[in-house]
Image 1: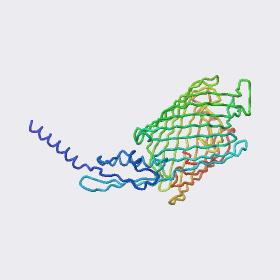
Image 2 (image 1 turned 90 degrees about the vertical axis):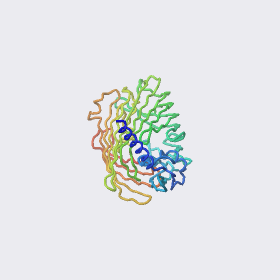
Image 3 (image 1 turned 135 degrees about the vertical axis):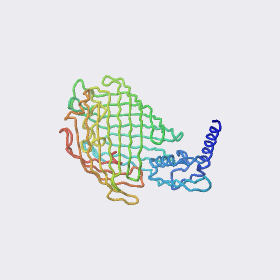
Image 4 (image 1 turned 180 degrees about the vertical axis):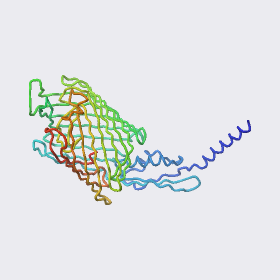
Length: 425
């Protein structure tokens, strides 16, 4: 019996030694194609390191991590044997141009000529740092400054700092009627950024802000305030799961982002409240030139009967063609689905057409969950669009969509054009 145990023990030890002897060690890692991006930064965020055993699964995850960076449009690797149980890894990247202007022109409902001028670097110092700001004029003066460094302290820890002084004319709704207010939001935000692994990350922090409302026009009554000055603090948590793979303008996979906020406020018109929503994304390649894209959003907030309900029905947020800030609610259910097809694809430029349907439903302020199923709260828009995509510039997608109403009330537009930078989702 003892001799049999000795034989088993010897066989186990031999298998361990043989496994170790057959392990291929990484002798070197070379970064190719990096021009602005620092090779030292890329080496810092890789899990694959010199001296470790070669693990193709970890290496594949590192390539996915690189392709998700704003500075990199594509990345791949090769492995070369250079000796007994040793290898050299070459990682090749194709960089995006990341110093980009932010430029927009439009007219408001009052026919004010409006514009937005900004500049952002999405790869400051070659270390995946986003820094920039903008100035906007829409009859009022707005500015913002943004700093985001996901890998400032380590591969996993970073920070984001934001300041904004926003002004705009916005409608507030009182019993199916509205009044226009000058809305001013002055905020200071600090977030900690933590990357759990290649698929999971969490951001958390605090935002201190002041909201000011000044009556401009519309309905009025003694109980409706003409002016408000509200001091608030917002605690924010964002959890994201990403399992997306990118091939230039094509995307495949699944992504989920949960936003949770709790707002502290002291005023006669609004109590402390919570708000959360979750965005689910699903993308699938269809043949060589097709891409099916989907976004499902569900959100709820504290259900108070207030004109300050946080979920907005808006062209640029959820339903293309519906109009600008058409309505507000304390709950939102939105499904956007579209098929994108590439009709032109060269080295630096791609052009896509798309057909889409946007479906949405809302819970009225102070309403019930069954508001989601009431016909008067349902909106469905469908339409077609066009995309001009620069394959060498980060997020340089100019989109045009035309959406028309399939289901909806008369307080929303029958149809409309929607312009923007970047894919709608």
